[in-house]
Image (tube, rainbow, N blue to C red):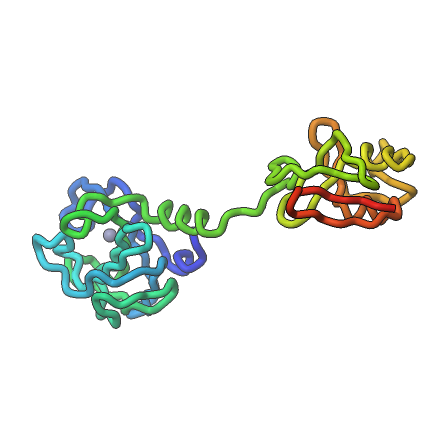
Length: 248
Ligand SMILES: [Zn+2]
C-alpha cells in the first residue's frame, strides 16, 4: 500500500462482504477508507477528470453521491465517492496527491468515508469492470519506478571487446549503466601479472590492490578503471567498436 493510502483507516476492503446498508451478501467493488470528518481527499494516481458530479442512477455511478472520476494514462478510471464536495472539473488534469474534494457521506453511505474504486474503462464509466484497487495502485507505481539491476554482470546489457596494447583478448567484458567490467584474470595475465585471491574473504587483488568484483560462471569481473589503475594502464573507450582499450 502506498504511503498516501496508509494515511487512511480501512473500514471495508475490496471483495465479498455483508452490505452495511442492506445487510445482504454483496461484492464490495472498492475499498472504504476513513480519515477525520471532512478531510481533504487527494488523488492516488494522476489523470484527467472525466466525471465530477452527484452520482445519478443508471450512469454507472448511481448511489455513490458526489463522485470524482479520474482517468489515468493506462485508461483505468479512479472513482472517489461519497464526497462532501469536490474542487475539480471535467477535462482538468489532476496530479497525484492533488486535493480533489473533501471526505463525506453523500449517496448510499452509512457514515463519512471515501469509497475508492478502480475500473477498467468501458460503457457507464466501466461499471462492473472493477479491479483490486490497492493492488492496482501498488502495481502502477512498481511499473513506474523499476527497481535497479541487482548485479550488472548477471544481466549484461552490452558485451564489449577488450584490447590491450593493440591486441584483442579472446575474453570479453560487459557494459552496463555506463560502467564496463572486465575479466580480471585475462586482463592481468595479458600484461604478466597474476591476480591474487584470498579465500578467507574472497577478495581479489591485483598488484596488492583489492578490486570490486562481480562473479559470473567462475570468472571475476571488475570495473575497467579499477583494473587499469591497479595495473598502471591507461584506459580508453571506443564507442564505435564497443571496445575497452588498455595501454601501458
Ligand atoms: Zn465502499
